[in-house]
Length: 133
Image (cartoon, rainbow, N blue to C red; front, side):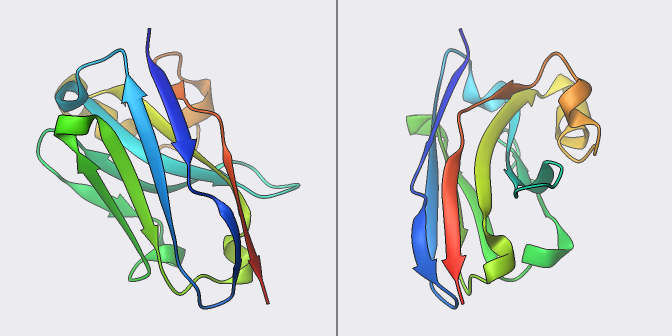
């Protein structure tokens, strides 16, 4: 059974940093694309960043480029999101997600705004990030 457990959220002042972690189990990490999403109140879930666990390819939504860094520890089946220079607009519930790599299709799947419609995407519970101004 695929399980994802996100942690590391909290309350931070604008300009501060947080590091989110996602512990994964139930699947072979190298065979999946994994990523971070966020959902602010009243808004749709948004892709923040994704990574191909097999080759390390990464992508970021434009609003976080240069501030956030996604990484993995494949030996620990762990995903991280280092968030620096946080802004109040980064306030949201952050979710980690995993989907089979499918020869690169999974990595592209993480970028799809309709990702919630896919059956083969696994979600962890969210962790709240609140950035005060």
